[in-house]
Length: 523
Image 1 (cartoon, rainbow, N blue to C red):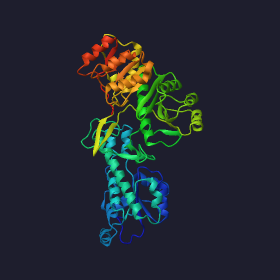
Image 2 (image 1 turned 30 degrees about the vertical axis):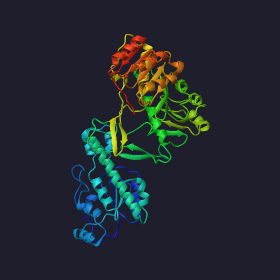
Image 3 (image 1 turned 45 degrees about the horizontal axis):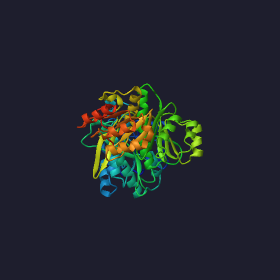
Image 4 (image 1 turned 120 degrees about the vertical axis):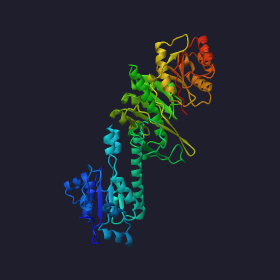
């Protein structure tokens, strides 16, 4: 049989899906309502194997599937039946050629993104680029006035209604074009040598393939609408975290939790790399770390991070690198927190949080990937785009530029402070001692102001501490301030015109100083 003629009395549906969730029940319901079902390949086998009557597309085209399935539906008997307007002229033309109408197209595409995500070879990825599927989807969406287009199993129930109104048809068409647009964007990124997570270069055209994964009440402020989106198939520890207790996440919760977990994961990796796998706790407020500590237990790390700045941690977001047990949970009793994110939380701790801190959002997240992602900053009319700063300590070549050498203890604290300061907003200065931040100055418009804020925050705890700066010192004022507060060692990128004066001041005051050669501005 090649197409159908004017005697066609049954509505026809073409079903060919990669995601087969619910498709057998959907096709069976169509047949029970008098539809004829056309299908291809694996979908046809799934339907007939389940006892659902279905006609092979090759029976409609009069031509077998060829080229290992690359050509199945690319035929006038298929696309003519989809694209024909339901007016006298087009229907008469179909009759001349013996082509029947197709009134519903249910298609989703080869799993290209999933194939790439599991590390498949290039040839396999190419074979998972769907051709016929997007062509049918776009054709049906163009002709949505006469053809229902389904790309999402969630819409099957709607399609079983006796009459689908114009607004719903238009919504399904928009969803269909979004589906193919996202698919094409993923292929483009792959062939450009980029992905959703790691660019090898920034392409001439950057397509943002975003899909909404969470609704929030509003954005940063109540008058700003907001939502949370996933970029392509990228994974994220906070984006994919499981909320096991507390209220729904807010826009600001997502932003702060992502910042906290990124720093927590980097410091945990540093500790492991150094052969000292202590546990990390990071408290963040408005995108900036306000208390960070490493210790032998989650409870101890939390208590030290909290005590680093008990004022700022109030209402903050906390990330830890180890499982939270009941003792660690109970140690948080006296502090109001917005979010706690950890790789695991024991059932006893979850129960305690639910009972004692019902507003605290408790998240369980997978360890953060070390793979960098693109960092986008909005501009009027566009974006500034860069690769996220994921440079590890092992990528640096630290150079001691003073007569005095840091002690082993100071080296450990310098490394720790560097990990923290690169996650603070510029200008930023961090004081640390014994694996705990004792003073933080972030978001200042001059380096000396950042240092003054950090020293004031530290108070007497600056005695014996180290200082890290994310950018070089234009003058020797920070060195002299640090020495007056009792700081013993300084780490900074170096590279300023007055480096000789800065080094001379450190030697004069008996401090050690390390240049990393790596700046870490964060705006």
